[in-house]
Image 1 (tube, helix red, strand yellow):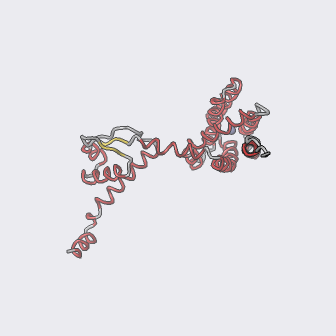
Image 2: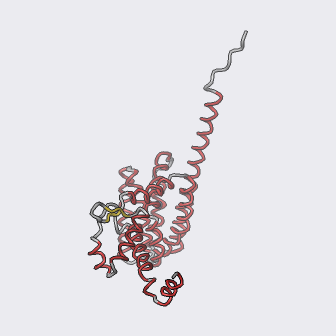
Image 3: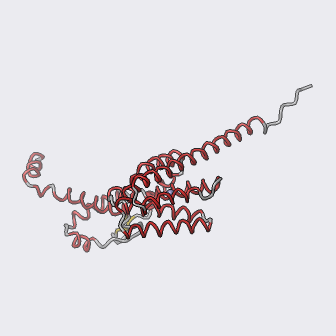
Length: 271
Ligand SMILES: [Zn+2]
């Protein structure tokens, strides 16, 4: 009996088809959820409509949906209507942002950026179209305005926006896609670095000058100068963040020592 089933599966490719098809559909929907094309809480079309749209049989579709429900990406209500799970956004975004808040992750991110930013700036200097150059200019102006306002949230946002315009102008789709896929991470990194710098700043506009150097080199279509300016921007950021981190650790250490040696009253000698 078992042999018969096996034989049937091997000689008739159609026997394999529903399982594979269900996997492919499940993977496709999962990808759309992970990329954010399908948003948490969104209602999917009915099984009948979906099977017609995707041109797949209802059993295959049902199997795919069941898989996604089992993995927690979809939920179904009493009527059997599928929704993208509400917890998807939380489970995808929050751990990233939380991870980003550890100093190790912040330094890893800066290290990655020190490689990518330098290359992106050089490519942008070489390849930026007039539209790209206009966009980079507009974003640099927005960053200058944010500095004038001394608004740290806006400074961080315009800083990240500027770098994304440079990735776009690199005309390297892999690079752009890589950085877009890390966008939550990168924006959080820029924000934390900026907030840190703002709270500990000694020279309030130093980073604006670093960005101006990148901007000027791209406008001058000078790849080597752009690469060097972007590299310097990231090395300075790493050194500054490292110095702030070390200062904070020293402060913590002295607070710990203070707690041990100075907060407890000395024992009175018994007389
Ligand atoms: Zn920057």
